[in-house]
Length: 495
Image 1 (cartoon, rainbow, N blue to C red):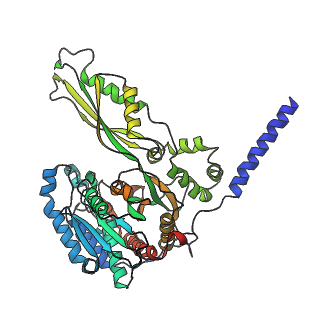
Image 2: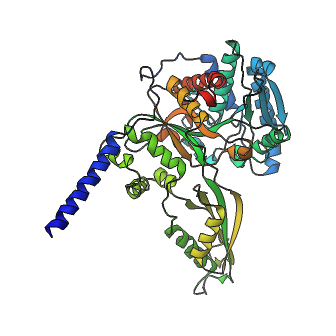
Image 3: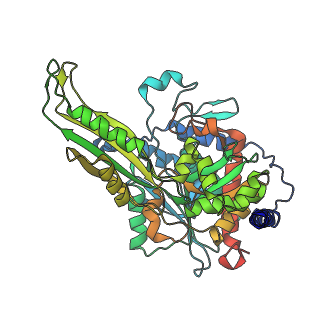
């Protein structure tokens, strides 16, 4: 017995030794900024006015083609606004209007051996629910400046990014920057409804012209303030992968009738049971490759004892996943999620409906597929009375490693403009237009360089969307530095 106890304590000491060795020898993956203090940038009043004007043009996109046709004058006005506001950009770069309302700008570089880069930002916005208009502090399309913010739909998604890029281009051209690497700027008109007539047509134009990009940057993750668990500093989360997307429609068709003579089980009963079964059986927790790199990049800056856990992620994998799964955002990071978003049932309170349906939207982790979702839902429901139809689908993206020159380029630029910020790869939870360019690049990054806390993030697609003016100035500076760094930072210079 004594020998067994001695062996146990020896093993325990060995384990503790390994844990502490891994923790103490852990090296930071962050770039060291010069002073670690935020930059103090002057407010550019013209840039503020330009974003205000952009917000005031109502470029709402719709799935309905008729509504989209009716909205064309708004998109025409927006393109005219860009051309009028940024004459140096449109006179210096080659511009192509694709499918009537999508822009592709080409800033030709002097070195054809360098693969071109592309910066993407969409011009369309989601509509504002009419019943929420009174809850907006300022008109949703007013572009009002108040409380050191620009208010309105699109300030964060995604006109803030597009205008920042245009401002940065203007500054770069005015300062005489001569690109060695060709840079494209693209803007689609229907990202909010899938990008089929916007980004998809731009991507097709690129295929026809045999373009392949060594660097692709789209909207995506942000500089999170107080969002990353255990980290006090702001964290620039660079999306190196994107979850997949599929909506399943469950339909039940059974005899209805008068509500005074209900069946033991109606179509609605069957549907509700099916939806509940899917809800009660969530997908297993997993760490996607981008999430594993996220842990690696933040481990060094974790406080104790979390630092021990992150430094030994293989041993504590279950603990890490369970901890993140406790929050809504963390749960979405570590598993494929499904949520019921639409239900259709019944016309009148005294009539038992014959046909009922529900739509469940799934966001799929890399490593899983839409087929996995369909198979699991079918198995979970296990009821032939429930018809399962697959709607629009996009598979999860491939993962771009953090050990790529493009990621190092973004990290370098972040250290220059946001010296107080940590940088980490992350998984993009939503869907972006980058999916349409998947075969045109081997290096896709999803990052909108703007500081946002949880409250601000909640205004995206919501009420009182707004952008803080000092943070907007940082975003412009980031794109300006990025355009410059794209010319000097290469795969050979990444280290």
